[in-house]
Amino acid sequence: MKTSNRHIRLSREVGWRNLKKMLAGLVAMSLAVGACSPDSPASSGNKSAFPSGTQSASPTGTPTCGPNDSSAATRAFPSTAAAAEAPALLVLGDCVDGGIGLWRLDATGKWTSVGPVADGFAIARDADVITIARGGSLETRSASKPGETVETVPLRWSGSAPGAPIVAIDRSPSGSTAIVAADEQGQTYAIASADGTVSRLEGAPNWSFTPLVGWIDADHVLVLNQGADNTSRFFVVNSSDGSTETLGSVTDVRWFALSQDRLTVAVSKDAAVYIGHITALRGGEQPAEIGRLDPRQVAWDLALDQTGTHLAMLSGTEAADGAVENVREVGYTLLPSGWARSYDAPVPFTKALGQVWLG
Image (cartoon, rainbow, N blue to C red; front, top):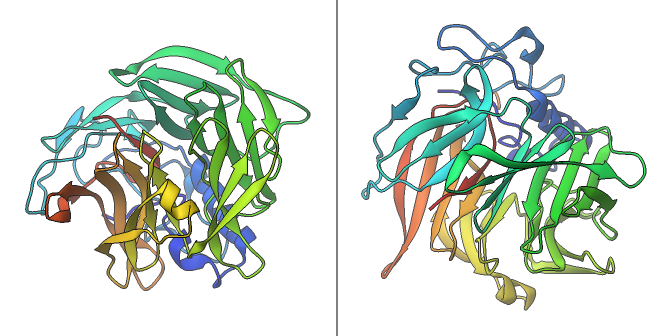
């Protein structure tokens, strides 16, 4: 199945296309929340999720929900990996009641539709709290009951709110939420307090290869910084005083994800996926490679479990026209002998706006 995702083209585009065009495609995808059905394409407003001059991931520009009845409450796909245990995930994606919603993957490999989140833009987890960025608010849910809303907090920006949509969030153990909004005009990094007051994050980068945020402790936020040399590096911003730290030993980072205990980071590059410890990376060490990517394979939407011993990611194959095909959920598990691929199966959605570990 071909798919359309706001980030899947990013691993090939830096250095090949203008960064602003890349971001236009990213944001267009975050706004593509049209109807899904097994036999008909998404709504006409979603004909192209990528900027002019680039190809959609569907040959017609209108990816459909499939391959079977996309309105079904559950779907099961067999894994092709040697070990069949699936990662326990919650995915914010399409094909839920005709639009954006939540999909849950259990250990048996069964996908279950949790319910619609029509204006959902991004998802994060801290401890038992699931946070979903919606239009103008942050919504929290319990990890044990992800289908039920616990609280909705309206966002109140200090000064004017950015016109760009939110594309990534991460909730701190202290209750504040790091936010990044992005479009072709620029990127805005900010911190939302528990009461919804939002302030710009001083010291944040002007451009990132992939706009992502992750709290590594109560004060420091991990982001990606796109330097003048067009190279993606880790960048740490102190949310208290705006001071910054560049982790220059790790370059060409396409995606990252933090474990729920904030100690481990998973990294996706062009050719491989890596695991490292935050303290070691800040000390100049390189992360360890755990899996190679094929020459045309891309990986995005990484998610780690509590202790950083289980990794999930979306993966697909980039076709000659730039479309990404054969999109699958792939899992890795740390065994006594080392990291091994433990899950590999198709997905029931065509767009993903983020995923978190539920186990």
